[in-house]
Image (cartoon, rainbow, N blue to C red):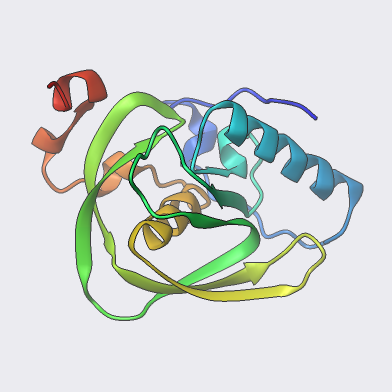
Length: 171
């Protein structure tokens, strides 16, 4: 059990593409996943990608119940997803506010596909296939972007809708 340091925007590792995981059910993979889970929970994250803790492997975790960083969103199933692939089910997109553990205290209005299908593998190498919409789809797309060196500000269409939470959402 270890909470790892989360790399911040500007660190070169966050801009790199991750490598495919070739072996499942290994002690190294189990340790990575455990560290990612501990780190995500400690930071109140909705998800975490391996590159955010400095590991360039195609591993993401996401989900859980109520999240204080995203109040009022529907629950997302807790998932460990290895070597994920995403396909959008139609061209319908919606903008939504996103944050990121690698870009603390900031939010941006990001367009994402409303409905997706994703697949990948669990830590034992079993296939996972799901369809997702709404917040679930947004979280999956956000975390998988990290595997290709893409941070959410790169997707923002209008920079006026990117800033510190304390300024954007003043009462």
